[in-house]
Amino acid sequence: MNAQRFRNIRSFIFCIFLLMPVWVSAAEINLQSVLQQERTWAGLNTKKIKSEDIEWVYSEGGNPQNPTIMLLHGLSGSRDNWNLVARYLTPNYHVIIPELPAHGETKVPAGFDLSIANLAEKLRRFADAAKIDPNLHIAGHSMGGAIAMLYSAQYPLEVQSVLLVDPAGVFKSANTVYLRDPEQLKRLIVAKQGDFDQLMKIALQSSPFIPLELKASQEKLTIAQSKNTEQMVFKLVEMSKLYTQFFCFDG
Image 1: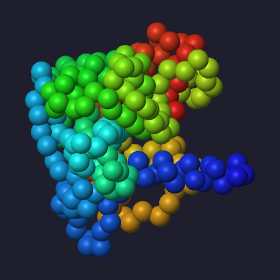
Image 2: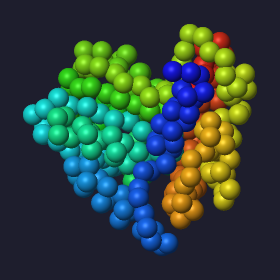
Image 3: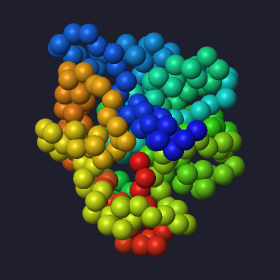
Image 4: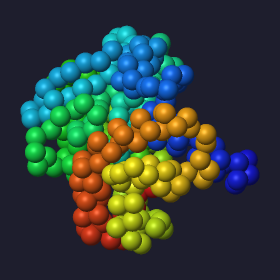
């Protein structure tokens, strides 16, 4: 596979996670209705549980007697980023897809610590509260990949395997624009109209066609999450000061 083809495939995969994959034909979009239909199509049900000071919302599907796999979304994403993948997992796995704290419908108190370390610890508390099989498989995209790595490192006897998709995290060696200047992470925040187009230009090798109605709905939803995204980016910038030689963000 040549380098150009690899970059194109990588951009396509990243776009699947960047956008909530929903299919629409009407000019007026009820995004939540479409997403609920998609979860049903994927064999997922919506559940809620309170653990300590977090009100978790998550998707669950498949037979609980089957091996359990937990799927973690990325920065400013949601559980629905995994719906197309979950469609092929629920027949053979017990699938758990939490909306991470301060994302989607999962609620946290004011001043909540959004560091990767705290998110990994709170995820473990969530697994306890939801009575999830500790012998699980875990997959994470972008920020979810960083959480998956830390979770697996902290609880190695409870994780059977780890799948990482373009993960963020701490690496021994890296050379990215975000390592050289962590302030560049702030360019990933979608806070106003037009920012979503900028994010796509930064994140994708080549932008695919996206219906205007779908892109507008996604941008609106992402803007609504911008304050929490900004807090997480701040934590990543602070983290870079502690790991000057080792920190990078790739995804």
